[in-house]
Amino acid sequence: MRYLTAGESHGPQLTTIIEGLPSLLPITAEQINYDLKRRQGGHGRGRRMQIETDTVEIVGGVRHGKTLGSPVALVVKNDDWKHWTKIMGADPLPEDIDPNEIKRQVSRPRPGHADLVGGMKYGHRDLRNVLERSSARETTVRVAVGSVAKALLKELGISIVSHVTEIGGIKADTSKVEGKTIDEIRSIVEKDPVYCVDPSASEKMVQLIDDTKKEGNSIGGVVEVIVDGMPAGVGSYVHYDRKLDGKLAQAMLSINAFKGVEFGLGFEMARIKGSEVHDEILWSEEEGYTRRTNRLGGLEGGMTTGMPIVVRGVMKPIPTLYKPLQSVDIETKEPFKASVERSDACAVPAASIVAENVIAWEIAKAIIEQFHSDQLPQLKSQIDEMRKYAKEF
Image (tube, rainbow, N blue to C red; front, side, top):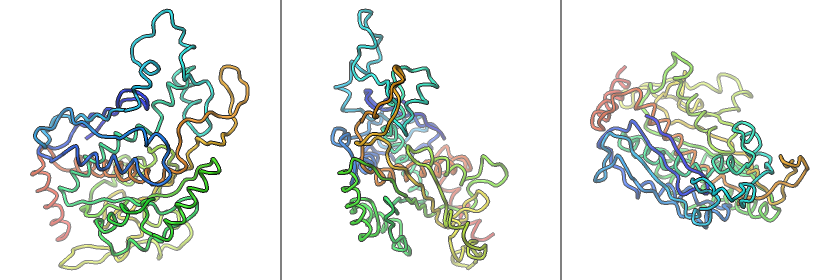
């Protein structure tokens, strides 16, 4: 199962084609639009979210609400395109127009962005050719793809949710998720302005975001994704590139501005002893094999244990600042203060939605790779058999 995306931040649309979905999977635009709206929300978002109202069009691979087994094509149109048609159009420029005279050309790379190195790599003197694609706007269609993956996981009895655990050094009390179902966690998070389960921490986070915005600065944070209902044994220990935790880590770090990832206790494991890290194995006739704890985050040896998968990612502060940092103009080589594109003071809540959806994709992909998946009923049957087998092993 795979997908590709295409499109620029101020181009006409963002497009994705998904290949490898089983047939007979129920999918609606309404399901996907729900996740797209969540991605645009969260306290601290910038002006672009006031311009765009992201909705998806399903333009291939689905008939009467169910997948056909053929590639699924999704499109999200950019409302702001109407203001950029001359600047970002695909047609060649008329011969009497000097490309250097086009508005919004960028020769001044912004620190922390792909601008400078991307220009070097692809030979672009107009760095807009870089920033239009490297923009986090591309995560719009990745959320759409993840939403489709979540529809598949739901059919297989697998649920997933994300929440914000830290913003700007303010940490939520994550014990508040203990003992709660995925649906219960989601019901709390969806009512919170920063998608946090701890109301006290949330209030402080909101205030910090407001204060940071007034300063012309930005802040980052940490998001957590929890996956429940995974059968044991998905992934593999036999080759490095088949280890599921490696794939999940890559997915998390593929999100714009994400710079770290951990599972379970994560980096805390470096500071405690082995007896405080590893999960003792239990068995009962009712539940089969379980773990006394879930410190390893539901993964051992690159495979699922049947316990909830718990993965966190750290997002750096957004580098576009209203008090810009110093850079160098690539044409004049003169120093300058970096230009400001539309920016968020904090995009951590929105990034948690992106994280939820990219993790959902990797989980679904791993299942598709391991089980026969041409038709959804066949896949469901195999997952049920796998759960039964693992319980009786």
